[in-house]
Length: 71
Image 1 (cartoon, rainbow, N blue to C red):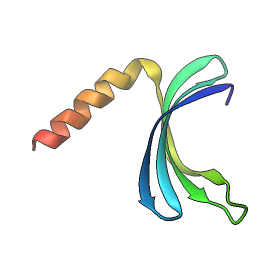
Image 2 (cartoon, rainbow, N blue to C red):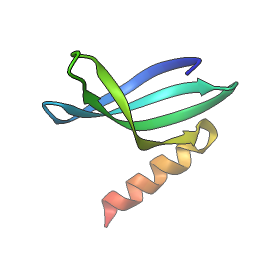
Image 3 (cartoon, helix red, strand yellow):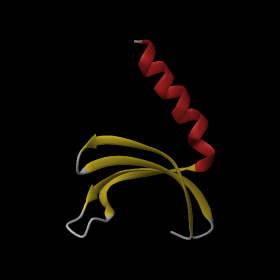
């Protein structure tokens, strides 16, 4: 990643968490939501499980999540 800002970290257990980041990759901004795991070295590392949503679609994602919570 060229640049990243961690927005939130959600614990999934002692050795897993979901990290929500604002990132820039190849000059484009993304909202990256990804699983991380605690490696044997003690470092948190990303997995392949996740999604990078173009930054300009974030409002649509938030609206969809709010609709999901209404049901």
